[in-house]
Image (cartoon, rainbow, N blue to C red):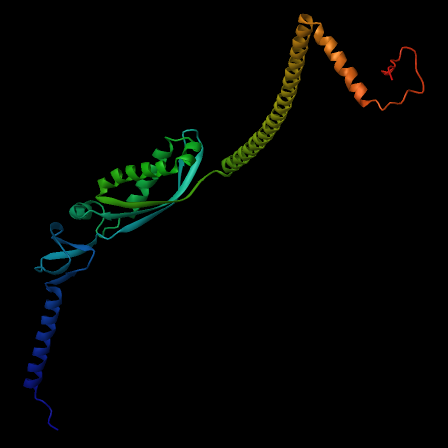
Length: 297
């Protein structure tokens, strides 16, 4: 086997060196870049922002640099944010704030706050400040009774605050909204007492309703008895009036004609005679009437 001569070996090493230099230059001067979905490409030239590229392929000259900046929805967790109510009750809450960078503010945010779109530290600080400011406007009972309004106030104030950082709030989740243990015990005791009071009031109303029902029944029965008595009295009065009227009529008739009385006596004697069986009484008492006898026979 014949070995290559020195001239051939030198030529080979020359080409290898050229290829290596070309590879290094291509790697350094590679003009093709990719901006992933949900991002923007911030183009800088010697440290100064000269443009913003959208998603997809970007071709840049060697003296420019592209940095990927996320505009996706991000979240910041705020654990145990503390505040105080207007009646000096300490309160704490845990929140999760979801936000994103406004696409027209990418250049500003890149220059002032973040090179990758992560503003979680700013969001956490702003949220704690807003929570303290909002809770200071409410008393402790109002925070409990108007929790939805408190959440809306925090949301509105935080949106206004984060606009300064080029961020827009998507939504806020409030968790573990709580007061001190002593205050929560006091609230529970108050709720228990209120429930007992309502139960006692309901029981009293039930007793009063039952008593009213009994009174109504007794009054109805009394009215019924009175009506019955009034009816009987009226009937008796009517009968008495009728009897009195009959006696008055008879008395008037007797006063007008004494023959009527004699006629009545004769009618009575006739009835007695018709009923007599012909037998004489076995005993006659003084003053007793003697039956009629036909002495002509």
